[in-house]
Image 1 (cartoon, rainbow, N blue to C red):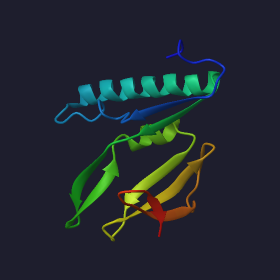
Image 2: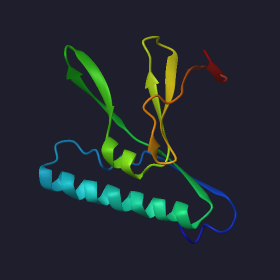
Image 3: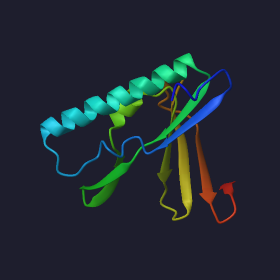
Length: 130
C-alpha cells in the first residue's frame, strides 16, 4: 500500500475488516491468533494514516445472539476496533423497518457517551433525513 500512497489525499475503504476475525467454531488458541492478526493489521493502517495524507474507513461485521427472549446484534471485535479508531460512527436499525440511526460514539480518540445522533432512511434513490 505504501507504494500507492504519496502526497495527494487518499482514501482506503475496507469492508469488512473483521471478516477473517469471525470464524465459526474456533478454539481459544485460534481466537488468540485471529485477535493478534487483527491488531497487527489495524496498527499498520493506523501507521499509514499517521504517515500519509490518507483517510481510512473500516466497516465491521455484526453477529446476533439471543438475550432475554430477544435477539440482540453486536459488533464483532468491538473492543479492538474501538481501541484503534479515532472516530466511531455506529449505524443501527430502529424499531421502524426503514429507519436507521447514526450515532457518533468516538471523535478524535475521545469517547462521546452523549454524542450526536441522526435518523435517516435509505430508499432506491438516496439517503434522507427523517
